Length: 191
Image 1 (spheres, helix red, strand yellow):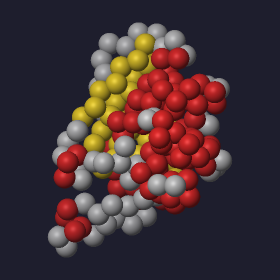
Image 2 (cartoon, one colour):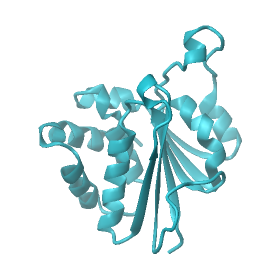
Image 3 (cartoon, one colour):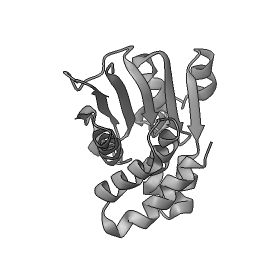
Image 4 (cartoon, helix red, strand yellow):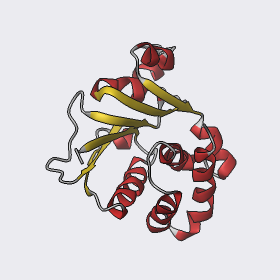
């Protein structure tokens, strides 16, 4: 199998590390070679955070170059637009509709861009946009929006749901497992 590339993008504190661990666990259970590389950026200050997950028969580099990503999973709408250039032709974006104002918007130097989903679709990008924040709150915590998006992604990958449940069991602390199972189920049902 040729190497596949997934980018998980968002803003610091949105849970990209847990999402990459869940996805990596699923892929390892399927027998793939997997490399995960996290790029923090200004994560402590609400800055852009990127995690690369590559998998296949043999993976030689953990990073993803422009035009290489098969899938971009975005926890924040502007981050989906920021990283769209990394998507390969025919790639997919799964994004939360959540918006978090970056510093130029907060200071009044810029306005938050409008029509992001429509702009991405006008570039012939397959976009799935879900209100992951509302679904996470419904599951019990806004912090579970990352797991909601993993539920959405699980419907787009050809792996049995039981593999995803096992990954949740292995990656999520026990005291949060039930809430995250609910978030995952809401994500799976979102489309």
